[in-house]
Image (cartoon, rainbow, N blue to C red; front, side, top):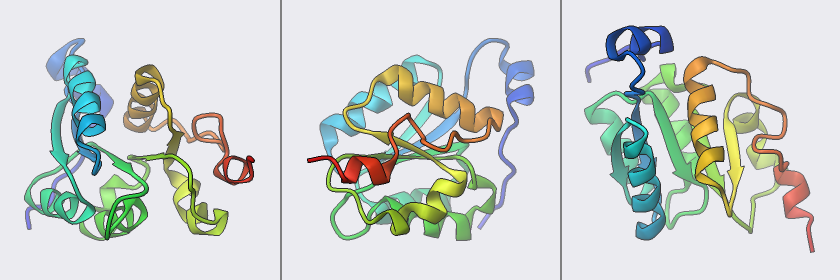
Length: 160
């Protein structure tokens, strides 16, 4: 496996002026969601690779480096938390560079606690602007807000 260091925001700005050339891995089992988010990120200057499963996401991580990984939480067989754990084994430099997208039902808050310490969380339905802000903050090294996108997973799970 070839190891690489993630590009810093400053290096990206110097080499691409105002273009935001982030390498993004987008993993979601819902083809419409995956492709819509990939198109939006591509329009913003990202190089997007898509995968339909957590296992395919791990394979993509073995093949190349990514600056940010966006993944759905709930996918058949292997979900977003599994992908996150595997990715950090393969690419420890991705810590703090994951955005987890989730809808109901959410796992127990304990299951998300390690993830929430360093990563980002966005609850569906999501706005493309919110997702983009999370990607930029991950690249800039902005500390994650305690509530991710403004909705705490433990509060969301408790809604009627």
